[in-house]
Amino acid sequence: MGDEIAPEGANVVPFPDVGSEIEPDLDELRAALEGLRREIRARFQPAAVERGEIDWMELFEELRRRVSTLGMVERSGVVDEFGMDEVVMRRGQRLLDFLFDTYWRVDCHGLDRLEGSGPRLLVANRSGVLPYDGLMVAHAIERHHASGARPRFLVADWLITLPFVQPYLARLGGVRACRENADRLLQSGHWVLAFPEGEKGAAKVFRERYRVMRLGRGGVVRTALENRVPLVPVGVVGPEEAHPILFKWTTPARMVGLPFLPVTPTFPWLGPLGLLPLPTKWWICFGDPIPTDELGPEAAEDELLVSRLTEELRGRIESLLHTGLDLRPSVWS
Image (cartoon, rainbow, N blue to C red; front, side, top):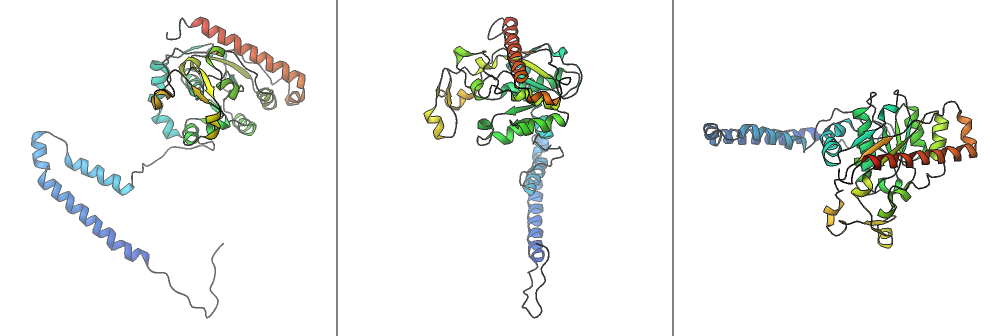
Protein backbone atom coordinates (compact mmCIF):
# COMPACT_ATOMS: atom_id res chain seq x y z
CA MET A 1 0.00 0.00 0.00
CA GLY A 2 1.62 3.24 -1.12
CA ASP A 3 5.33 3.86 -1.55
CA GLU A 4 7.66 2.32 1.03
CA ILE A 5 10.93 4.05 1.96
CA ALA A 6 13.98 1.87 2.68
CA PRO A 7 15.55 2.48 6.08
CA GLU A 8 18.82 4.34 6.22
CA GLY A 9 21.86 2.12 5.64
CA ALA A 10 19.88 -0.66 4.02
CA ASN A 11 21.28 -2.29 0.94
CA VAL A 12 19.10 -1.15 -1.96
CA VAL A 13 19.43 -3.07 -5.19
CA PRO A 14 18.39 -0.95 -8.14
CA PHE A 15 15.88 -2.45 -10.60
CA PRO A 16 17.32 -3.23 -14.01
CA ASP A 17 16.43 -0.92 -16.83
CA VAL A 18 13.90 -3.18 -18.53
CA GLY A 19 13.09 -0.68 -21.26
CA SER A 20 16.71 -0.55 -22.43
CA GLU A 21 16.73 -4.33 -22.90
CA ILE A 22 13.38 -4.53 -24.71
CA GLU A 23 13.89 -1.59 -27.04
CA PRO A 24 16.68 -3.19 -29.14
CA ASP A 25 14.56 -6.33 -29.53
CA LEU A 26 11.64 -4.26 -30.83
CA ASP A 27 13.98 -2.47 -33.25
CA GLU A 28 15.23 -5.80 -34.56
CA LEU A 29 11.67 -7.08 -34.98
CA ARG A 30 10.65 -3.96 -36.90
CA ALA A 31 13.72 -4.28 -39.12
CA ALA A 32 12.94 -7.94 -39.82
CA LEU A 33 9.33 -7.14 -40.72
CA GLU A 34 10.42 -4.32 -42.98
CA GLY A 35 12.88 -6.64 -44.73
CA LEU A 36 10.14 -9.22 -45.22
CA ARG A 37 7.90 -6.53 -46.62
CA ARG A 38 10.50 -5.49 -49.19
CA GLU A 39 11.07 -9.12 -50.21
CA ILE A 40 7.34 -9.75 -50.72
CA ARG A 41 7.03 -6.55 -52.75
CA ALA A 42 10.00 -7.50 -54.94
CA ARG A 43 8.93 -11.10 -55.56
CA PHE A 44 5.12 -11.09 -55.72
CA GLN A 45 3.59 -7.67 -56.21
CA PRO A 46 4.46 -6.97 -59.86
CA ALA A 47 3.18 -10.34 -61.09
CA ALA A 48 0.04 -10.11 -58.96
CA VAL A 49 -0.79 -6.66 -60.28
CA GLU A 50 -0.36 -7.82 -63.87
CA ARG A 51 -2.68 -10.78 -63.32
CA GLY A 52 -5.19 -8.74 -61.31
CA GLU A 53 -4.91 -11.04 -58.30
CA ILE A 54 -4.86 -10.27 -54.57
CA ASP A 55 -2.93 -7.23 -53.42
CA TRP A 56 -0.18 -8.97 -51.44
CA MET A 57 1.00 -5.77 -49.83
CA GLU A 58 -2.45 -5.04 -48.47
CA LEU A 59 -2.65 -8.59 -47.17
CA PHE A 60 0.76 -8.28 -45.53
CA GLU A 61 -0.19 -4.96 -43.89
CA GLU A 62 -3.35 -6.54 -42.46
CA LEU A 63 -1.34 -9.48 -41.15
CA ARG A 64 1.21 -7.20 -39.52
CA ARG A 65 -1.55 -5.12 -37.92
CA ARG A 66 -3.19 -8.22 -36.44
CA VAL A 67 0.11 -9.60 -35.15
CA SER A 68 0.97 -6.30 -33.51
CA THR A 69 -2.37 -6.19 -31.67
CA LEU A 70 -2.47 -9.94 -30.84
CA GLY A 71 -5.89 -10.23 -32.49
CA MET A 72 -7.47 -7.54 -30.34
CA VAL A 73 -10.04 -5.19 -31.85
CA GLU A 74 -10.23 -1.59 -30.87
CA ARG A 75 -13.53 -1.06 -29.04
CA SER A 76 -15.37 2.21 -28.72
CA GLY A 77 -18.74 0.94 -27.52
CA VAL A 78 -20.20 1.43 -24.06
CA VAL A 79 -20.77 -1.50 -21.71
CA ASP A 80 -23.37 -0.66 -19.07
CA GLU A 81 -23.35 -1.79 -15.45
CA PHE A 82 -25.27 -4.97 -16.33
CA GLY A 83 -22.91 -5.93 -19.15
CA MET A 84 -24.89 -5.05 -22.30
CA ASP A 85 -22.35 -4.26 -25.00
CA GLU A 86 -23.18 -1.79 -27.78
CA VAL A 87 -20.55 -3.30 -30.08
CA VAL A 88 -21.90 -6.85 -29.65
CA MET A 89 -25.48 -5.65 -30.13
CA ARG A 90 -24.54 -3.83 -33.32
CA ARG A 91 -22.68 -6.84 -34.69
CA GLY A 92 -25.50 -9.21 -33.76
CA GLN A 93 -28.18 -7.07 -35.43
CA ARG A 94 -28.13 -9.01 -38.70
CA LEU A 95 -28.49 -12.35 -36.94
CA LEU A 96 -31.36 -11.08 -34.79
CA ASP A 97 -33.06 -9.61 -37.87
CA PHE A 98 -32.65 -12.93 -39.69
CA LEU A 99 -34.17 -14.89 -36.81
CA PHE A 100 -37.00 -12.38 -36.43
CA ASP A 101 -37.91 -11.88 -40.11
CA THR A 102 -36.89 -15.09 -41.89
CA TYR A 103 -36.33 -18.01 -39.55
CA TRP A 104 -39.22 -17.61 -37.10
CA ARG A 105 -41.23 -15.03 -39.11
CA VAL A 106 -42.32 -13.24 -35.94
CA ASP A 107 -45.60 -11.29 -36.02
CA CYS A 108 -46.74 -8.94 -33.25
CA HIS A 109 -50.24 -8.20 -32.02
CA GLY A 110 -51.30 -5.41 -29.64
CA LEU A 111 -48.01 -3.53 -29.54
CA ASP A 112 -49.94 -0.28 -30.02
CA ARG A 113 -51.40 -0.76 -26.53
CA LEU A 114 -48.04 0.15 -25.00
CA GLU A 115 -48.22 3.92 -25.06
CA GLY A 116 -45.48 6.18 -23.76
CA SER A 117 -41.84 5.47 -23.06
CA GLY A 118 -41.59 5.24 -19.28
CA PRO A 119 -40.38 2.13 -17.46
CA ARG A 120 -42.69 -0.86 -17.28
CA LEU A 121 -42.56 -4.50 -16.27
CA LEU A 122 -43.48 -6.95 -19.02
CA VAL A 123 -44.48 -10.44 -17.86
CA ALA A 124 -44.46 -13.31 -20.38
CA ASN A 125 -44.96 -17.06 -20.44
CA ARG A 126 -41.73 -19.06 -20.39
CA SER A 127 -41.24 -20.77 -23.73
CA GLY A 128 -38.46 -23.32 -24.08
CA VAL A 129 -35.17 -23.95 -22.33
CA LEU A 130 -32.99 -21.35 -24.05
CA PRO A 131 -33.99 -17.66 -23.81
CA TYR A 132 -34.85 -17.13 -27.48
CA ASP A 133 -38.20 -15.72 -26.34
CA GLY A 134 -36.53 -12.93 -24.36
CA LEU A 135 -34.32 -11.97 -27.30
CA MET A 136 -37.23 -11.85 -29.76
CA VAL A 137 -39.63 -9.92 -27.50
CA ALA A 138 -36.91 -7.35 -26.80
CA HIS A 139 -36.11 -7.15 -30.52
CA ALA A 140 -39.78 -6.69 -31.43
CA ILE A 141 -40.21 -3.74 -29.07
CA GLU A 142 -36.95 -2.09 -30.12
CA ARG A 143 -37.89 -2.37 -33.79
CA HIS A 144 -41.60 -1.65 -33.76
CA HIS A 145 -42.41 0.49 -30.71
CA ALA A 146 -42.29 4.26 -31.05
CA SER A 147 -40.00 4.62 -28.03
CA GLY A 148 -37.30 2.39 -29.55
CA ALA A 149 -36.67 0.99 -26.05
CA ARG A 150 -34.94 -2.38 -25.75
CA PRO A 151 -36.21 -4.27 -22.69
CA ARG A 152 -33.71 -6.08 -20.51
CA PHE A 153 -34.84 -9.69 -20.08
CA LEU A 154 -34.31 -11.56 -16.82
CA VAL A 155 -32.57 -14.96 -16.94
CA ALA A 156 -32.86 -17.71 -14.32
CA ASP A 157 -29.87 -18.58 -12.14
CA TRP A 158 -29.52 -22.17 -13.37
CA LEU A 159 -29.19 -20.97 -16.98
CA ILE A 160 -27.03 -17.89 -16.53
CA THR A 161 -24.47 -19.82 -14.45
CA LEU A 162 -23.73 -22.34 -17.22
CA PRO A 163 -20.19 -22.11 -18.67
CA PHE A 164 -19.85 -19.47 -21.41
CA VAL A 165 -23.56 -18.59 -21.26
CA GLN A 166 -23.56 -15.63 -18.87
CA PRO A 167 -21.10 -13.37 -20.76
CA TYR A 168 -22.94 -13.71 -24.07
CA LEU A 169 -26.41 -13.27 -22.59
CA ALA A 170 -25.26 -10.21 -20.62
CA ARG A 171 -23.83 -8.60 -23.74
CA LEU A 172 -27.17 -9.11 -25.51
CA GLY A 173 -29.24 -7.62 -22.68
CA GLY A 174 -29.81 -10.59 -20.38
CA VAL A 175 -29.73 -9.92 -16.64
CA ARG A 176 -29.68 -12.38 -13.74
CA ALA A 177 -33.21 -12.70 -12.40
CA CYS A 178 -33.40 -11.27 -8.90
CA ARG A 179 -35.44 -8.59 -7.17
CA GLU A 180 -32.50 -6.20 -6.76
CA ASN A 181 -31.64 -6.20 -10.47
CA ALA A 182 -35.26 -5.64 -11.48
CA ASP A 183 -35.58 -2.70 -9.06
CA ARG A 184 -32.38 -1.06 -10.31
CA LEU A 185 -33.38 -1.43 -13.94
CA LEU A 186 -36.87 -0.01 -13.42
CA GLN A 187 -35.58 2.87 -11.32
CA SER A 188 -33.11 3.65 -14.12
CA GLY A 189 -35.97 3.96 -16.61
CA HIS A 190 -35.53 0.62 -18.39
CA TRP A 191 -38.23 -1.72 -19.60
CA VAL A 192 -37.88 -5.11 -17.92
CA LEU A 193 -39.08 -8.45 -19.26
CA ALA A 194 -39.70 -11.17 -16.66
CA PHE A 195 -40.67 -14.86 -16.90
CA PRO A 196 -42.01 -15.68 -13.43
CA GLU A 197 -42.92 -19.28 -14.33
CA GLY A 198 -39.20 -19.98 -13.94
CA GLU A 199 -37.94 -23.52 -14.25
CA LYS A 200 -41.49 -24.92 -14.22
CA GLY A 201 -42.25 -23.07 -17.43
CA ALA A 202 -38.97 -23.92 -19.15
CA ALA A 203 -39.33 -27.61 -18.30
CA LYS A 204 -42.84 -28.13 -19.66
CA VAL A 205 -43.14 -31.21 -21.84
CA PHE A 206 -44.81 -30.95 -25.23
CA ARG A 207 -48.23 -32.14 -24.10
CA GLU A 208 -48.34 -29.29 -21.54
CA ARG A 209 -47.34 -26.53 -23.98
CA TYR A 210 -48.97 -23.12 -23.59
CA ARG A 211 -50.30 -23.86 -20.14
CA VAL A 212 -49.25 -21.01 -17.88
CA MET A 213 -47.83 -22.32 -14.63
CA ARG A 214 -47.97 -20.53 -11.29
CA LEU A 215 -46.29 -17.11 -11.50
CA GLY A 216 -43.96 -17.55 -8.56
CA ARG A 217 -45.23 -16.10 -5.27
CA GLY A 218 -46.30 -12.70 -6.54
CA GLY A 219 -42.80 -11.27 -6.86
CA VAL A 220 -43.45 -9.54 -10.18
CA VAL A 221 -46.58 -7.87 -8.81
CA ARG A 222 -44.75 -6.63 -5.71
CA THR A 223 -41.93 -5.29 -7.88
CA ALA A 224 -44.39 -3.37 -10.05
CA LEU A 225 -46.27 -2.00 -7.02
CA GLU A 226 -43.17 -0.83 -5.17
CA ASN A 227 -41.72 0.82 -8.28
CA ARG A 228 -45.13 2.15 -9.41
CA VAL A 229 -44.77 0.86 -12.97
CA PRO A 230 -47.47 -0.83 -15.09
CA LEU A 231 -47.61 -4.59 -15.52
CA VAL A 232 -47.80 -5.66 -19.18
CA PRO A 233 -48.95 -9.24 -19.95
CA VAL A 234 -47.24 -10.86 -22.96
CA GLY A 235 -48.11 -14.14 -24.67
CA VAL A 236 -45.43 -15.80 -26.83
CA VAL A 237 -46.54 -18.53 -29.23
CA GLY A 238 -44.00 -20.57 -31.22
CA PRO A 239 -40.91 -21.23 -29.06
CA GLU A 240 -42.40 -24.26 -27.33
CA GLU A 241 -42.53 -26.10 -30.68
CA ALA A 242 -39.04 -24.84 -31.61
CA HIS A 243 -37.61 -27.09 -28.89
CA PRO A 244 -40.39 -29.60 -28.09
CA ILE A 245 -39.48 -31.48 -24.92
CA LEU A 246 -40.59 -35.11 -25.11
CA PHE A 247 -39.35 -35.99 -21.63
CA LYS A 248 -36.64 -34.97 -19.15
CA TRP A 249 -33.59 -36.71 -17.73
CA THR A 250 -32.96 -35.57 -14.18
CA THR A 251 -30.31 -37.91 -12.76
CA PRO A 252 -27.64 -37.34 -15.48
CA ALA A 253 -28.41 -33.62 -15.44
CA ARG A 254 -27.72 -33.27 -11.72
CA MET A 255 -24.27 -34.73 -12.23
CA VAL A 256 -23.37 -31.68 -14.35
CA GLY A 257 -25.25 -29.13 -12.25
CA LEU A 258 -28.41 -28.83 -14.35
CA PRO A 259 -31.98 -29.22 -13.06
CA PHE A 260 -32.88 -31.44 -16.03
CA LEU A 261 -31.66 -32.50 -19.46
CA PRO A 262 -34.30 -32.10 -22.18
CA VAL A 263 -34.87 -34.84 -24.71
CA THR A 264 -36.32 -33.51 -27.97
CA PRO A 265 -36.88 -35.06 -31.43
CA THR A 266 -33.37 -33.85 -32.37
CA PHE A 267 -31.40 -33.76 -29.09
CA PRO A 268 -29.29 -35.66 -28.09
CA TRP A 269 -29.73 -37.87 -31.16
CA LEU A 270 -28.13 -35.37 -33.58
CA GLY A 271 -25.44 -34.23 -31.18
CA PRO A 272 -24.70 -30.48 -31.23
CA LEU A 273 -26.99 -30.05 -34.26
CA GLY A 274 -29.88 -31.09 -32.04
CA LEU A 275 -29.50 -27.82 -30.14
CA LEU A 276 -30.66 -25.84 -33.18
CA PRO A 277 -34.28 -24.69 -32.76
CA LEU A 278 -36.88 -25.60 -35.37
CA PRO A 279 -38.14 -22.83 -37.72
CA THR A 280 -41.62 -22.56 -36.23
CA LYS A 281 -43.99 -19.65 -36.78
CA TRP A 282 -44.10 -17.15 -33.90
CA TRP A 283 -46.73 -14.71 -32.64
CA ILE A 284 -46.02 -12.25 -29.81
CA CYS A 285 -49.20 -10.80 -28.31
CA PHE A 286 -49.18 -7.79 -25.96
CA GLY A 287 -52.07 -7.11 -23.59
CA ASP A 288 -53.41 -3.96 -21.99
CA PRO A 289 -51.14 -2.72 -19.18
CA ILE A 290 -52.33 -3.15 -15.60
CA PRO A 291 -51.71 0.22 -13.85
CA THR A 292 -50.21 0.18 -10.36
CA ASP A 293 -49.26 3.81 -9.69
CA GLU A 294 -52.62 4.63 -8.07
CA LEU A 295 -52.28 1.80 -5.55
CA GLY A 296 -49.04 3.04 -4.03
CA PRO A 297 -45.99 1.12 -2.79
CA GLU A 298 -47.70 0.15 0.47
CA ALA A 299 -50.08 -2.07 -1.54
CA ALA A 300 -47.21 -4.54 -1.94
CA GLU A 301 -47.81 -5.56 1.70
CA ASP A 302 -51.44 -6.51 1.00
CA GLU A 303 -51.20 -10.25 0.39
CA LEU A 304 -54.80 -10.52 -0.81
CA LEU A 305 -54.31 -7.77 -3.38
CA VAL A 306 -51.02 -9.26 -4.58
CA SER A 307 -52.62 -12.68 -4.96
CA ARG A 308 -55.58 -11.22 -6.88
CA LEU A 309 -53.36 -9.23 -9.27
CA THR A 310 -51.12 -12.26 -9.83
CA GLU A 311 -54.06 -14.42 -10.85
CA GLU A 312 -55.43 -11.64 -13.05
CA LEU A 313 -52.03 -11.36 -14.75
CA ARG A 314 -51.84 -15.12 -15.26
CA GLY A 315 -55.34 -15.15 -16.76
CA ARG A 316 -54.46 -12.37 -19.19
CA ILE A 317 -51.33 -14.19 -20.37
CA GLU A 318 -53.37 -17.35 -20.99
CA SER A 319 -55.90 -15.32 -22.99
CA LEU A 320 -53.10 -13.81 -25.09
CA LEU A 321 -51.75 -17.30 -25.80
CA HIS A 322 -55.14 -18.36 -27.09
CA THR A 323 -55.21 -15.25 -29.27
CA GLY A 324 -51.81 -16.08 -30.72
CA LEU A 325 -52.77 -19.69 -31.38
CA ASP A 326 -55.94 -18.51 -33.18
CA LEU A 327 -53.95 -16.05 -35.30
CA ARG A 328 -51.44 -18.71 -36.34
CA PRO A 329 -52.81 -21.06 -39.04
CA SER A 330 -50.26 -23.77 -38.27
CA VAL A 331 -47.01 -24.43 -36.44
CA TRP A 332 -45.02 -23.62 -39.59
CA SER A 333 -46.95 -20.71 -41.09
